[in-house]
Length: 217
Image 1: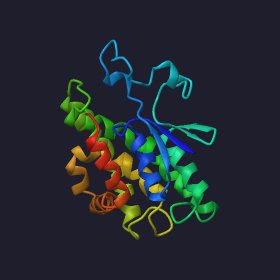
Image 2: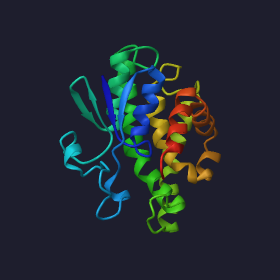
Image 3: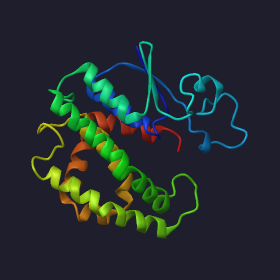
């Protein structure tokens, strides 16, 4: 049995989207980020610093999974593992595709995510933090190059690996999503804009997003 730890409004959304794509049954344990809770946290709320969760992930971050006793952390790595375990078109067809899927996942985490989160926090302020427009503008400038790289890759056939929708698209799309508060980036990268829209039209994504919207902000 697969267990996914983490609320929908976290990087656990990536793993839940993939599980939906694969048609996997899973138990969902809604662990909340500690920084989103008051001090002291409400009684009975399991969060990332709760002793019971720290037994699962001593790093104190979500998501984590327990797949029949195999415990893994890090959302992008979890998706690569689940895709390869269950196979099908989302998974790599050979070693070359495996390398490409890993490359794009790591690329998104290194080149995109930090800047995209800066845009999210400083243009949307969804975490209640003070907003700084200068930080958001600097992040937009830093992402122009990576967005151009991604746009050129998607211009070939609309997908990242193997001319089909794969786990690489899920991983990268879920990172790129954080930058949607900067529409100018997408206007300059029309293939990225079309690709992200197509990814988010998939029924498995919509199922995850509907559940996310029903979760308390």
